[in-house]
Structure formats: C-alpha cells, structure tokens
Image 1 (cartoon, rainbow, N blue to C red):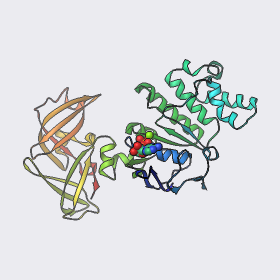
Image 2: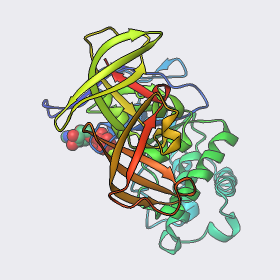
Image 3: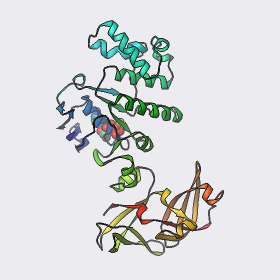
Image 4: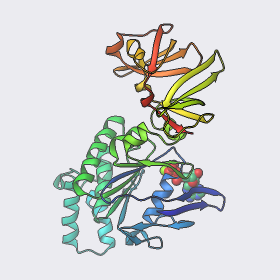
Length: 358
Ligand code: ADP
Ligand code: MG
C-alpha cells in the first residue's frame, strides 16, 4: 500500500495516507477500534472500494485500477454473505461457475475445499445454509473464498458473530490453515487478544492512520504511542518530566494532585532533562509485597479495588504519594485475597516500562 487515502462524500477521511507492506505468506492483522478505517483499507486491497489517492500492489504488480476478480484476492465478510438459496456446494462453487469452469472440475475443487475446512464433502455438500451451525457456516465462507486459489485472503472480522468458545476454535483452525497453505492472510479485527494470538505482524490503526507496525511482542511490550499502549491490553499510563539521565536510565518526576511528588526510573537511552514523557507499564509487570522491594521503582500504597480475573487478581492500588497503579497478581503468590484497605508495597523494574511518547 502506498499513500492509500479514502475520502467518503468529500468530507469523511476514512483512511489517511497509509503506506505499509505485508510479507508474502504471513498472517497480517489490521487491528483498531470500530470506525478506524480497517474495513476500508481491506476493501481497497480487494478492489471493492476505489482509493481517493494512493496505490495498491500485490506481488510487485500494481492492481489499483483492477476489478476484484483480476487481483488474486478473495474476501471473507463479517456477515459471511452466503447465498441462502444455494446449498453448501453451490455456495462454494459460485466463483468457479462465474469463471465458466467445467462442471466436473468445479465438483472436484469444491470437494477439496470442503475437506480443507474439515467439513466432509459427502455429508455437507448438499446441505442448505440454514441447516448449518454458526461454526459450519464460517467454514463454508472460508472454503468459498479459498476455492478460487487466491494469493491473498482478506478476512473482515470473520468471527465477530461466534460465541467465545467457537471463536477460539476457529482462530486456531484458521491459523493452522494459513500455515498449511502458506497463503498471505490479511485479517481485520478490533479484538486485541485475537490479533496478538494469531498474527505474524500487526498494523494498529487509529482514525484512518497507522499508529504502529510490528509483531505481537513488539506491539505489546513496546507500544509506540499512548493510543497503542491503551488499546492493546491494559496499561498503567504515567506521565512526568525527566529530571536527570545517567547510564541509559532517566529519573522522571510527576507532581500528583493529591500528595506531592512521584518519582520513578525509566529506560532513558534517548531522553534529555526537562523533557515531558508518557510511560506505560503493563499490570502483569507490577510486583507487590517482597517482590516489589527488589524493584528499582517501589512505593507504598493501599488497595482500593480487587477484581478476580481467572487465576489472577487485579488490584488497584492508591499510592501514598498520589496516583493509582493497577497490578495483575497471581493468586498463588498472594494467598487467597487482598481485600480493599490492605496496605501493600508495590513496584516495577524500569526495564519493564516503556516510554511511549517523549
Ligand atoms: P472499521 O472497519 O475500522 O470499523 P470502516 O473502514 O468501516 O471502519 O469506516 C471508517 C470510517 O469511514 C467510518 O467513519 C465510517 O463511518 C466511514 N465510512 C465507511 N464506509 C463508508 C461509506 N460507504 N460512506 C461513507 N462513510 C463511510
Ligand atoms: Mg469494519
């Protein structure tokens, strides 16, 4: 994508000067909140939407002016858009019939596609769409998109309508399928967990622009912007002013509303004194109790909220100096519960924090 822009009705800039590349054979995800422009980007790649400006290339060939069926792409829609009047085989073979394939070839390909998504063709080929479960419909939509052997498969929030358990199962199977076929998948979702677990690379989209490109680990552990830090999982966002920098570490202070000065260390390779910074620390990187004493940043505070999240407990701690820190703590490390009002020591390693904006 080079300088891709889409303006609707001459006023709504849905996508604003977006440029990026996707490696062949990778599972790439566009991740962002609703209305950020993900679908519009995907539709421009697939030729379903004409860019206002910019160019699209697939495998080195410019496709900006080509219709969808000449692009080697195929799309799985959020709504699935299966044809209710056709049976399963009819749906999957549709694209091949449009291309005037001979009948016996279509049957062969449809059967292969059904087997590929683990719906035995003997059992499912003749079924009506209304006789399928949500997960089975999902597989038919995938098979229909794959049957034309595209080079790039575009998937627009395909699991949005499934319940959690089924969604997880489809995530695993779709990822498996992508690996096995070695195709390039471009996947759109607003679900950060889905993006982090499935993707080789992620582009985080906000208000029609790319905020950050990277793999799951980079984006989660080193968010480039405050938006990314807040959107990808939870983060403690601290701000302050750099006081001193020494040995690749900076001391930052923040005047809290409540009680005065909060002072903490951050990785400071490129910081200078006097600079304002925003710092992100993930809740699971926060230590409490004796573990906190070993951290270069440590404070005392009082638990003001406690929520169970699976095997961990999420504590909100009001620091004595002012400011609040959210910590995810393994239950086994802290006993059964840390009730509201408990006094705790809380800390984190500077290396586990990221300066997201200097
Ligand atoms: P996402 O897929 O991230 O939820 P979209 O790409 O669907 O976001 O939409 C991005 C923005 O463009 C939104 O503000 C949306 O209202 C607007 N938009 C999308 N399609 C159209 C359209 N056909 N006409 C006018 N505005 C549109
Ligand atoms: Mg969308």
